[in-house]
Length: 249
Image (cartoon, rainbow, N blue to C red; front, top):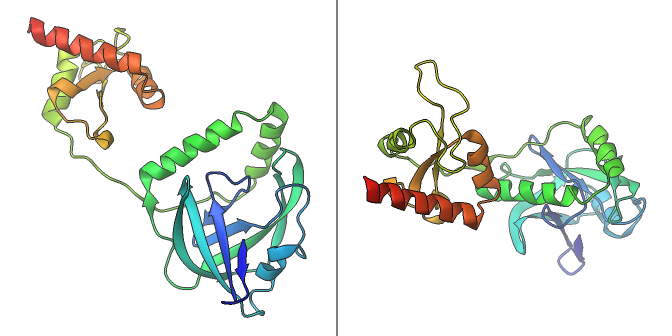
C-alpha cells in the first residue's frame, strides 16, 4: 500500500506473482490482505489503519493488480464492501500468523477480464512456489483454504479455429500409436477408432502453424507432458519423425 497525503489517495496493489498474501476475488468483491509480511498483522499498523478507516476518512482508494512480473494493471477506484475480518495465512517465513482481510468492491463497473494465458502462467508459478514448502505448511494451508469460498475471475480466452482435416490426418498417420512415446492409444472410442490427441509442435499461441508439418497425434500422457515441459529434446524428436515420415510417403 502507498498513501499520498498530497492527493489524499491510497494505492493498494494485489501482486499475485510475488506476494505472500492470499488475495482472491469472490464474485465482485476482492478479499484483500493487509500490510505486514511477518508475524500477526494489526489494524492500527501503517496503511492498514488508513484502509480500515477509508469509509470515513475521505481517502480515495485505487487498486492495481499484477499477473505478470513488473506489469501493473489499473483496476479502478475501490471501496470497502464490509468490515475487515481476520484469518490465518502463512507469513514470508512460512509461519502461521493472523492477517486482516479487507473486502473491497469497485465503485463502478466490474473487475476486468484477464487473459487466460496470464492466469494459466500465474497458476503454474503459484504451484512452483508451493512445492518449496514443507508438508506441514502445505497441509495447514490446504485445510484452511478448503473452508473458504472459491475464488472467481473472468478470463479472456483466445480460441483458435483449428483445421479438423489436419487433426484427422495426424491421427490417421499415427495408426493408433503415440508419435512421441510410440505406445498404443490408451483406449478406443465407441466407433473403434484409437483415442489420440492432436498437438502443435510449435504452439499456435507462439505463432506455430496449423499444418500437417506441425501437427502430431499423442497419447493423453505425452500431450500433457508437452504442455507441462515442452522439452526441447521431445520437440526435436517429433520434428525428426515427421521429416522421416514425409520422406517415406
